[in-house]
Length: 436
Image (tube, rainbow, N blue to C red; front, side, top):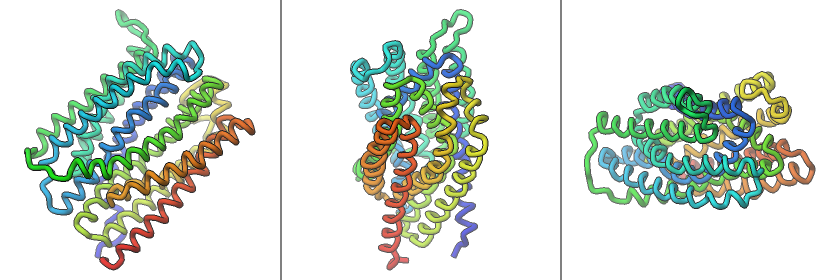
């Protein structure tokens, strides 16, 4: 019987490279925010509004693709040759990218009707149009990374992400502000830089899969069915969560662009620390998935509870840092006094929110490994749309707490979300006790 230290080391061995890659991925977004903020508050507001909507569209396919590693790890635990599933995964990713491409383009005419400031509307449309074409590169990258992750190959994909931070920042500066014969493109420059970076990341990983793995064409049975059965609820849960966050930027953006910019800044900030429990979640999806497929139920429980403990400690440390240095952290992103004054009070609320946000994403990874993602979807619906958004409107709009009210509501909903999911996890483990 392996001790707790074994499971801690085994999770971290896989999670640490993913942590670096996840932080690298979010730092690409941080670079966008910093460059946009340095260009102008208007640019930051336009990008904040545009990404709030495009993320909700793009994340649908990403959410499904992010179950590839969990499903294939279950297959690996069952003794199947998962080298035969590459082409099916690639076809599925391309199908989703085409679907999301057209959905993104079709949304552009509705931007005029959302009530944003007239000066922001054309900027939001420009970002939307270019981002639609980035779906292909982004989905290829996600699919290849997940496929490699199912083999527990995590070092190279995440080193690539870290290297692309510098590529994206360089392209942002060059295209947003212009240089020599390259004109100042502003919002368009941010979108083009992201598009180029996503294609490079996707294509490099696809080539790496062919070089590193023994890819074969085999008879695939039930794979697409499992992708839909496990991936669709997981994807919808992610969309619900993203929509729960991004609807705030849309609602508050109609009141003032400063609130939209502040919300984007706060989400970017919390996302940096969130990348650590997200990496733990990714590792647990694979570890729990493998033990579930192999029916090693005692090991499954130990992986799950160890991962939850790691996430709790990490997010508590992050909350401590933010709570003691709110102004310093905010000024790292912007020098706009109005923006700083809006953000600082909310950072104290964010401290509590982060701990439970880390727990919920870790629990989601465990349920992916168990191939039981419907509970994740239902929990997100209840937490974000039955509780968070109505409570946010009450506090933020009726009682005029503005953006602070919405973040208090997010904090309350995250606590409820964790409670629901953890209760179901305990119930699931109890149902398996007869096989331990």
